[in-house]
Image 1 (tube, rainbow, N blue to C red):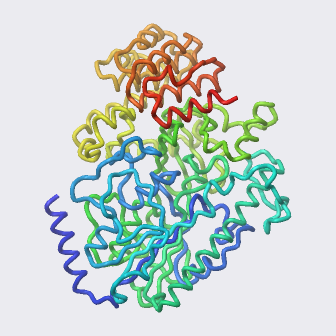
Image 2 (image 1 turned 90 degrees about the vertical axis):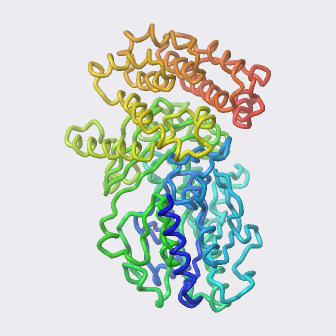
Image 3 (image 1 turned 30 degrees about the vertical axis):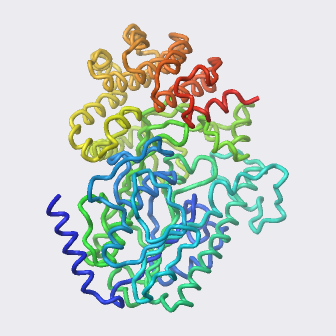
Amino acid sequence: MHCRIIALLVGLFLTDLLTAADRPNIVWLLSEDNSIHYMQHYGSPHGATPAISQLAEEGITFNHAFSNSPVCSVARTTLMTGILGPRAGFHYHRKMVPANLPTGVNMVPVYLRQAGYYCTNNNKQDYNVVTEKVWDESSRMATWRKRPDKSQPFFHMQSFGMSHESSLHFKWGQINPDGLTTKPDAVKLPPYFPDTPLFRYTQAFYHDRMTVIDSQIGKIVEQLKADGVFDNTIIFYFGDHGGVLPRSKGYIYEGGLHVPLIVRFPGKYKHLFAAPQGSREDGFVSFIDFSPTVLRLAGLEVPGSMDGLPFAGKGVTAESLSRRDEAFGYADRFDERYEFARSFRKGKYKYIRAYEHFYPDSMQNNYRYRQLAFAQWRELHGKGELNEAQSHFFTSKPVELLFDVEADPHEVENLAERSEFQSILKDLRGRLQQKMKSIHDLSLYPENQMIDLALKDGIAFGEKHSREIEDLLDVVDLALLPWDQAGKQLSRALKSNNPRVRYWAVTASAAFGEKVKPLLPSLKGLLDDTDAQVRIRAAEVLGMLRAVKPQSTIYDVLATSDSNAVAAAAMNAIVFLQDHHGYEFRIDASMVKASDEPLVQRRLEYLNAE
């Protein structure tokens, strides 16, 4: 740690020796909630973005840029720290409790301000970590124009919300196809969507959002030119994660992770970029790489706390950039909806491990279902009017998924069980397992335990408990073995003294369906476990198997636990078992000890809606 601090101080000292003219201004322009799929610049016939395309002519288009998480608070915290969320404990969207970064570890504007940059944000933050003063100013009025010394270099971040998910929360009476530039009949729907006028209108409307965003980007460019700083400014344009039609934002598919990224650089800084202006780069970059890149462009050392690598600046070559072909993604709780999934993409192959595979993608999230297309999709499923590809959203997932995203860009054809892809499957499975063990993935601790034990310093906690985390991952990955190999190990794990081992053993058991009958006595015994999370998970799995009625166990957990996270997990189980397995629950706030938790209130609102 001392060596890293010394290196950073040396980097700051060297930067201060540079003149303002040698230090680029850096601007981040973010469109909210959009992936590459809606932009003409990335191959769509719709969604014209002339201002963004002009930036690309003077810079680099990255064909493979990824948010590490498909939702804003987690993605933005990753972006600003250069740290993987599950390593530090900020991977749940919306935070119940913010995580703490280690002492001396900061967000990228802090390092830049220490080096003499003026740093402004206009204006979205949405961080899942405890922060002190990150920006010189963060507000709707924040701008580089307010810096006291006009020769001072600046870092400016600006978010554009016209593409946000909320833009699709229109009502039936507001639908006006004639008001769109993109005609609904002209769009090509993904194969997992039902072909209805509403889905066509929603997608066409969202293509038009891209052009609205583009005009706002163009205005910022004009301001930079008017201020005489455009030729001294490096501009990043990118999406803050994917989305936002159904199955994108909040989901670990490419639609949720694969974002546009264009970096425009003036000729005076071309020596900092491995590719020439006007080029397209196929090397992979992820959000963990953005902060290291900005520091490198500013002439600073990259702190050892960051997980990413610079993709521009001194030392980055065309060869090293082209070799980058991996991306790691994570999805956990999104508002009140729980999920634990990880992805690992290498080249054209994408591997997804669904650790709670029994939760379908369609699990209720109140905010998601404000969008009419989401609601219509569920309605059509209930009527039996969907084909197989359109129905996957509403069924449990396999524990493993493998896609060739070049041949199958919408990730519909799962290759995981095909014999000719087994070597690729095993390779990517191993790479993901190694990645999760190397970062000490804190999702192996249920959220309530992560809050109680890890959030003071998640990175240090993970390092200290690395052996247990590895063991827990091995337990849940028993789901990947044939039953004749997994059964005895699961039987032992269900009797472990460690409640987290028991929890993941129950979870892994769900993958085997009726084959787990020999374990039913042990599973039923866990309905009275000393750990509330084990009880909830046992009730879910036994309920799925129709081995018990799960209501009484979950009611008791809600009545006795004062943990907000336990209550949120129990309410999630209620919605899952009622909506997807036909169990009837009658629940109100008087039955919940932690009823003041907003995530619990969201579930109560849904369950008791008239």
